[in-house]
Image (cartoon, rainbow, N blue to C red; front, top):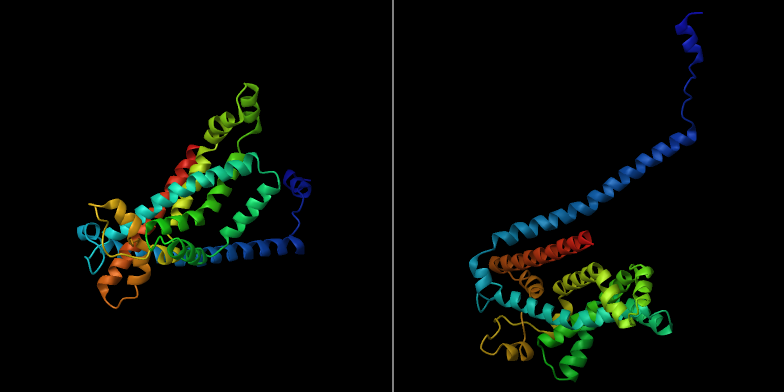
Length: 298
């Protein structure tokens, strides 16, 4: 027998695929095709929205957009940009201490009935529609306490909205700090406040910062609660009396321009609505980039 014939006899014949293997291959390919279709269905509308907003919004950009207010006071978005910044800063100033403090308590001392109750109420508040919070603030703050339609009522409402998110994200970030770091701090004679604020909180700084940035993104994109609490003004802040203008006057914000001006019949109003939407989108994009940089730095 020749060498080639002996090799042919020695080489095992590769068996064909069984019916079960064929079913697995077919089901796997169907699954990948379904995932691809689902991805296209998700990304397609998203890209379309981004393109429409970016194209129409960038076309409306001009120096007057940032130097004049919305009609009838002007043809820009100065008042809306100022109002969005004021409301967001005030809301974050209220929400960050409360949210981070609640997260610290839940992480370090919340393994009890009170902690479980706070988590439950936080989850309930997270699922509450924002317009319900706006109506609540309208009854309690605007009407009941006599604050009127102004930035403080809107900022408090936004703070109530974002505190649960910030508290839970802070809790999760603090729980990721190794227990050994806590034990090392106590072993060196540090007190509980020192361990929390000098060891645990700095160790979870990127996670807490991520929660704060996400809360800021939520605050920038809200409309319904502000309609009930902040009203809307087509005029910029009175720089001669800024405190009085903020505390006792209605204030503009970008999301109201998007909601209201897109329903107007003229092209100029539509251009302002797209420009406001583009600014909000850019701001949220910047926040998401900041979140990724914070996580990467960690």
